[in-house]
Length: 102
Length: 173
Image (cartoon, rainbow over all chains, first blue to last red; front, side):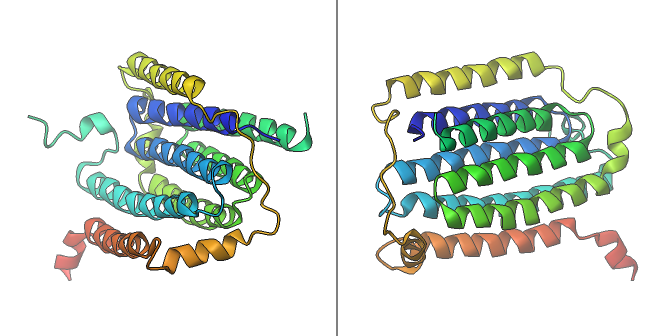
């Protein structure tokens, strides 16, 4: 049997790796990849708390499904923005997208 | 050590290794392919947790749709990524420090958590898939978040089409 803490430690590690990707990568698409890693870490947490809590209560799985929907929406809008910016400014590097920087 | 622990350990190693490759590899197409490996590893975890529906949705939505979308976006913006410059920005040591601090904080929280050594109860004789379907459409449970999520998805997809539309080409016609 696997204790709950194994899942939680793994998801904490995955979340931290995703956070590093978001903070450190220069490419805007790579930043979105990091966000996907963080969302997956959250989903592991939700699913394991569902399984180790009361499995008759489906809240954990339902929220994981909501996270799937939000991730799909976020990727669609994010990549559309990046492609639109790339068309106008010929760059996907986050530090060069500074139109709104004062 | 029983079989499920060995499977968990191997899957965890695979997930961590491929996630590290996602955030460090130079070639963006390779990063997207490593992301697919990570997502498949998470699918194995869902199967270990007996969350069958989540495992299927993970493959269909994440690997089948989101990862393909990423690969398309990378190919549409490819030229920029062959510049050979550094892939990490100047503040990356600070980013690594923040990530390690977050990980340490989460570990400290887990160390003090009362439930962290709990084992799973048996799912013998329970229809979790049926219960999930009931919970998603039952007015007593989660029908409102379900509907809000579908409206959000519709709005986001229409917004994405509008944002990515090439307006110059449209006006030339």
